[in-house]
Length: 280
Ligand code: IPE
Ligand code: IPE
Ligand code: MG
Image (cartoon, rainbow, N blue to C red; front, side, top):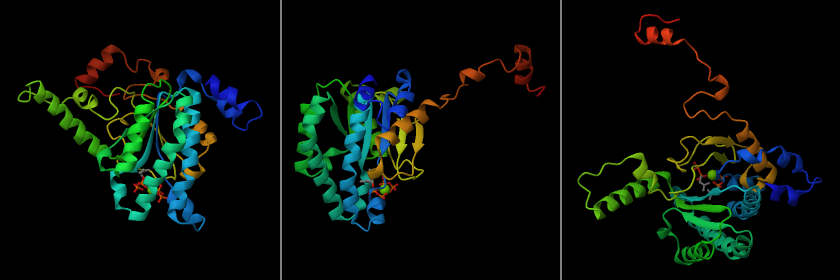
């Protein structure tokens, strides 16, 4: 957090926003559905791939801002298992852009102590880009700053299927397949994101009000922030505003908010109500 303020300086237009953020209540994990590249291009009468190209800049600035803020985990939805339905030329361009980003970004990741991880069914990626990805993951694996999860060929349902199969395989390896039953722990421990905090804040750009098969298990209690801004237009200000909105939320997790946490009835009244005799 101090890092961000130090790089901004009081004359920066984001200075006041950054100062308003409570450094003690930052989301540990921010997940982003980076949507709207195609519409951004359409509005400019450009081909859809121009929108994807324009989406690389906001990825860079978002990673940098999260690192400077001291966020622990940033998960970026880059390609879903359903995105193979798109025209071949668009999909190929996405792989080329990913390769370009990885080549260019490695020194930046290293100098900012950022660790890159990829989550998804990576075995289906073209060999070249998969190897590049593996190289960057290996080269940054000892970094201890921000963890960036790139969700690529990712599907929340696919992840759950993979996690359950992995849990079952482990039980088999222990010779416990006959008695094994799934529970929340055995599933969580085998997710692609095992060991990391669950997303506190889920951002979606381009105004769509759906989760599109993203982190289905992990977002059980994430706070949603949807902005109409299209991903190529997403700036540091948008990210800071999302964090501020998150900090104004009342996270109850099914319980009561601390401000409302006063007795609602005397013990006697509760007993009577529980017996079904009186409701007042
Ligand atoms: C998000 O932008 C990027 C990917 C899904 C790869 P879109 O390409 O979905 O853009 P829209 O939603 O068509 O505008
Ligand atoms: C979700 O966006 C996937 C990514 C951002 C990578 P989509 O554009 O694929 O989602 P839908 O089709 O609008 O639900
Ligand atoms: Mg879209």
